[in-house]
Length: 175
Figure 1 (cartoon, rainbow, N blue to C red):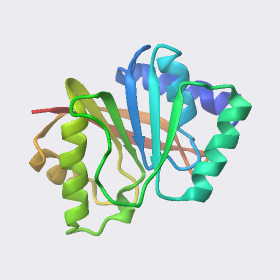
Figure 2: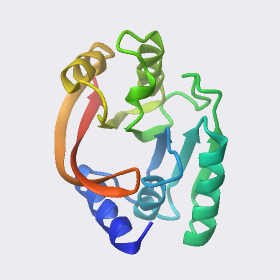
Figure 3: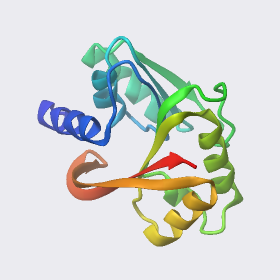
């Protein structure tokens, strides 16, 4: 990732309300396009928990972390299931970025994932969603049915497979 992309994403994270010292879960982190910039924002007082089921992507993330010098990221493999091995109320923010195409339109796994996200979020925490490759209206309905309430939307330049493109982030609070 080049420095311009990292700086851009750091500004996005600051704009949506991520702060130094927070605990962040990046579920479906891939090779870390968002993990590394959010780790910079939370700084050494915070931690980013990067979870993905693709071992190859996690190896790329580890290499990227070594190059970036970030020491506040914990990398976890997943079986692809939705059970999150974190205590209740332990996360300030959960990122679900560009993961929804892995779940079918009527997927019980997506409902289970949203329930788990709600469980691990602190009462004043928030869920941030990058809704790529899905019907946004359907996704918003599923998220709201999981007892989240829409907070705000960020529109601007984001990364998709490492390339800048215009997009939006939908941010939700627990109901």
